[in-house]
Length: 365
Image (tube, rainbow, N blue to C red; front, side, top):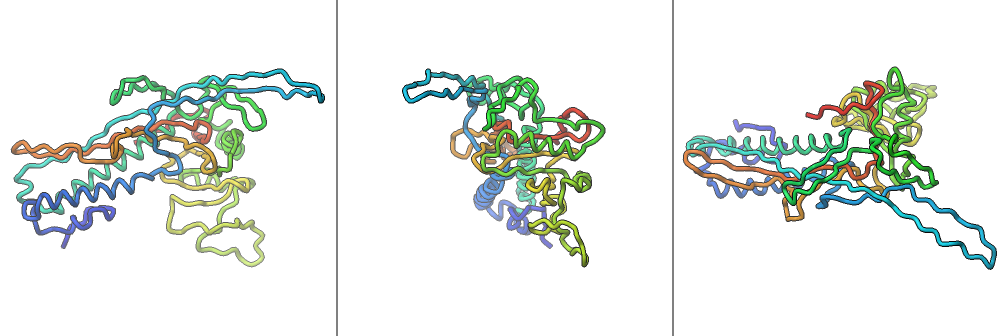
């Protein structure tokens, strides 16, 4: 019976080749398959967190955020208002770049006695490690509580100021569309509950933390871990659940019914579960840490929250084979991906920590 290595359908063909050793099958033939499979892997991993991340080759940008105000002056038919001048004092936002490698090694004797399927499982492990690393680094950048300086050693050793979501660091916050100003020294999008435990008012404030900067044609979404499902459902004055997937209300029911699709019975931890205050869809997501609530603004004319930085060189952001070593008795293939993540739109997301009155950065493993 052919072995199965949990290839996520990427390496099933190779995993089923359980008779030929590598030399019999042909190394050149094998590596042609590996190159094709790496290309498929890269296509599949380019949109792991599409709602959060956008690609860039920039290492640093200027964010021109500062309260800018002028005053309309009433004039008569002979009047001309004095010229008014304003200035925008921005600040720099940097995006790091790091290299991550995974090496696969064996001996020539291994090639002589092991099957193509045995080699395939090594590449499965490499690709799974790449996916895990992409997810880990994305979430670490998103949930980070503090700013830091990154030395861009892979390029020009420039010092890059990498930012978290808005965290009361004193940087200027743009005024909203109605002229409301914000104090950058106290305004933060990383919060804890007000007192005692998470209340409906804490979630309302979390959502407002995003909405108050302008929606710009986008949609606000509330993301939670499945562990917080019962808590959110308990706030019945604010939350209306989607219709249960396999249950219809009984005759004479007066329960509110959300005008949307039913909850999906086959997606236990990655599905919409209801609506908050009539306009914010609530989703459970497996990548949200337990005890955290996340409000994000997506779509419209809003910039992405995170930037996924790569070099401008073709394919440098892909998971690729960068080296092969053949020194008897050892052989090795070195896989690598260069990338880095940093927050760009610091105002389109807000995070509530449900374990205390102050935000605590989660441990992402």
